[in-house]
Every structure is written in C-alpha cells, then in structure tokens.
Image (tube, rainbow over the protein chains, first blue to last red):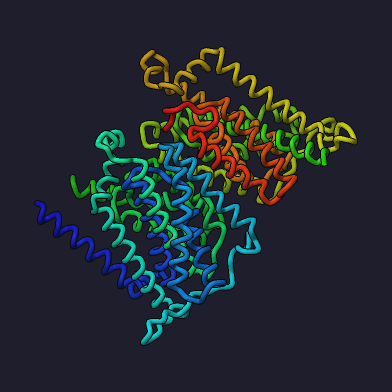
Length: 319
Length: 289
C-alpha cells in the first residue's frame, strides 16, 4: 500500500513537471500563448506561497499581495536605478518583500483568527498607499515604468529572455522549480511538521513546548520571501510594476486561487492559479462585466467546492 | 493657523463620526458571527444609490428614512441565502464569499447606474454654511454628526436595555451558552446582521449627500473602518467608537502639517497600538485571539 502510494505520487510529479516543461509546445495549439503560461507559473508560485501559510500553518493572511507588489517594485527599482541585471533584481525584490514581511510579522503574529486576517489586510494596504503617494519614486497611479528584463549573462554565452517568450518561460520555470523545491523541503523538515501541528491543534502544540508565535513568524516571513520572489518575476514578465499589485483585492485573488485549487495539497494552488488566470483572461476578453463573474466564481466555490478542485478529485479517488 | 487647525480637527471629527457608523456595523457582525464582511462597503454603496433613486419621489428626508431599511432587507436576504451556510466553517470562507459579493456589488451598481459619479442634492437648509467665520461647518456636516450621534445612541440603548440587545451582547461572549439557554441563535444572527447592514445603508445615504456617489467608493471607505476596529479592539463596540473618532481626528490634524500622510497616519496609529497594546485600546484579552 505504501509502495503503491509512493509510485502514485511519483507518477503525479512526473506528469506535472512534464506538462510544465512542455507547456510552450502544447499551449499554442490549444489557443493559449506562452506569456499566459508564464503568468500562470508566477501567480501559481504566489498562490503556493500564500498557501504555505494558509494551508500548512493554518493562519489566514489576507494581505499577501503587499509583499508580492513589494517584490515587483524591488525588482523594477533595482533594474532602473541600481544595475541592469536580472538576477540582482530578483534578489532585491525578494529581499524587499521578505524583510517587510519579517518586520511587520512581529506585530501581526500576536493575533489569531479573524483578527489576524484583519491586521494583515490593513497592514497590506500601507504599501499600497506608499506606492500610490510616492510618485517621484514609484510612478504613483501610473505604475513604475522604464525598465526591462536583461539578457542572462552566463559567462560563456548570453540567453536572450527579453524578446524570446519561450526562453523567458523556461527561465521562470527554472526559478519556480527552485522555490518549489525549497518549499517542499521545508514542509518535509521537522519545522514543516511543526507547522502542521500548529495548524491541527495550536493549543496542544503549545503544551508540547513549541514556541507557536515564533514558528508562525518564521512561516510568515518565509512565505513573504517567496512572495517577494514571485512579485519580482511578475515585474520582469510585464516590465512594469503597478500599485494594483499591492492592493488587497489582489490578495483576495491569491487566496481564491489557493482555495479553488485545494488548500490542503502542495500543487493545488498552482492548479487554482491556472484555472483562475485562464478564466479571467477569457472573461475579460468577452465581457466588460467580468468582475461580476469573478465575484460569482468566489461565491460558487465557497458554497459548493470549499475543498477545491484537488479536494474533490481526491474524494472521488478514495470512494 | 488656529482656524486651520480647528478646521481640520472638526473635519476629522466629522469624518471620524462617519467611520464610526460604518465600523460599528462591521463590528457587530464580526463580534457575533465571526464574519469579516468585506461587502460592507458594497452595502453602503447600494444604500446610497437606493437613496439617489428614490429621492426624486420622496425627497431627501424620505430617502433617509426608507433607504437604510431597504438596504437592511437586502442584507437580511443575503445573510439567509449565502452566509448562513458558512457559520460552522472556517472564517476564511465567509471572508472569501463577502469578498466576491463586494465585486458583484461594485460591478452591479456600475451596470445599473453607470460608472459616472452621481450627486445627491441635500435640502437647501442643510446646504448653507452656518456663519462666515466658520465657513467650513455647513449645516449638512452638523446634520451628519447629529444623525450619527442619534444612531449610535439608539444602538447602544438597544444593546443595553432590550432583550435582543442583551442577547446579542451575550452571544458575543459565548454563543454556545446562549444557544443552550433556548435562544434562537439563527434568528439572532440574522437580526444582528440586518442591524449592521442598516448602519451601512445609513452611512451610504449620508455619504451620498457629502461625497456624491461612485461605484468604487465602498472599497475606499472599508479600510478606515477596519483600522477603527483594530485600534479600538475587536470585541468592543465602545472601542470601535473611540477608534473611529481617533483615526478621524489624527488624519485631520495630519492634513494640516503633512497632507500626503493624512491617509498613512491611520496605519501608523494602528501599528503603534498593536505594538503597545496588541488587543487594541478597549479590547479584552482572550477575545477573538
């Protein structure tokens, strides 16, 4: 039984990675385009970062877009003012998002439940206002422009990721794989198991002598670092950073992706992001009232598929 | 200088009073049902647009009386159909659902009434300034504050002395025990939700007279109410009252010295409160933690 389980997991993993690696070849015939695939990967990574906290530690942060947006601005500002280097911009974006999360996290982890959610939302909005008001640096409402991703210089040869969409997709996939591996590794580690223990029964975890606040703070900070990284990738994708990326409605989208795909599973948020991004892309091209449809999607998923797509599939498999 | 300061403090108090009205509704729902109602701003906008629509027939005074109960009725229906199934579940789900509802409200109002802002005319007696020296205190602003004071007083009397109010307060502390004592908790939650939405609708009418109406205004007014609740302390309505006035005045005073930071000051205030007193000014330890 255990061997069987292991084999099944391996098959699933191979299928996921095969689909991801081959995406630039199977997507266009189905009516997609490579940049859409890149967006799914990046937003999927962001949703997985949210779920790192939501699904595995069990605390609801509804302001994670702030760290995503900070990552985007960090990358953009680094490319524009610091140095025209893509790897540097990714590091700067990740640092900006992660450090902001680390600092605010010390205030946020003191609360739990709905209060935690409210505080994260409100603090998330701080960065929205900063980006909005400080227009000399951030471009204000118009967003940050005037930068573009740079070719990767590997010493022997350069890879053009600016004009070649497929190359950029593979670069993003490479980054995605690293972060996903790190996340998976953390979740398998004793620390990750402690996160699950806190999710399942916080009081018991506390009785066992686990410093719950510190663990939640570390999980929160880690997820902010991942979030910042995803945001930095998003800025590279668009060559643009936008205050809307910091807004709480963006946080809602991320949480929705995680819930729609399945909060309890590692890959669920990626699936949720794929469905969400493709649906939004399609709806906004056919109707001006796409907001109503997205809102309706929220209502329907909450009422009828609270376990998400993977949760439903799993149930079918078990029964 | 003095007049400028006075102007901004009064301004802050008036805005604060308005935040209070909105935050109290939000707080009522949060305390009893553990639902963060993201659609509160949406209900506010709906209330405002209802007032706009019926003003030509019943006048401003009529709209002020009719629009809030109508909004509350919409809220009651929403609670019955959509939110009630979620009470047993993680608060995440009601949060997501109301978040989606907020989208629908915003898009729906834009669909019905158009994206263009709509002015609501207030009666002539309220529109003029009271005196030349204090030109900024128009009758409407005073009227707004008066309505807020009446509404808040009625709410507190209701909670303090009526059976419904006592049950709501008891339910905030321990809903299970209240249920075990034979109170119909479903009904209690519905009525409580309706009262909260009534306040949102009332804020909507008042806001329409002062700011005009736009489909997107709900989202912008929601965040200060959140901060008012956090600053005042979750679980305490008096705290919410205090928090709303405090952030209103703080942003009013900041507007004198550093206009760009008048929005940011609320967040600074929130950070300071959370740092020094994590439970909020009047919040009780152990509640909602």
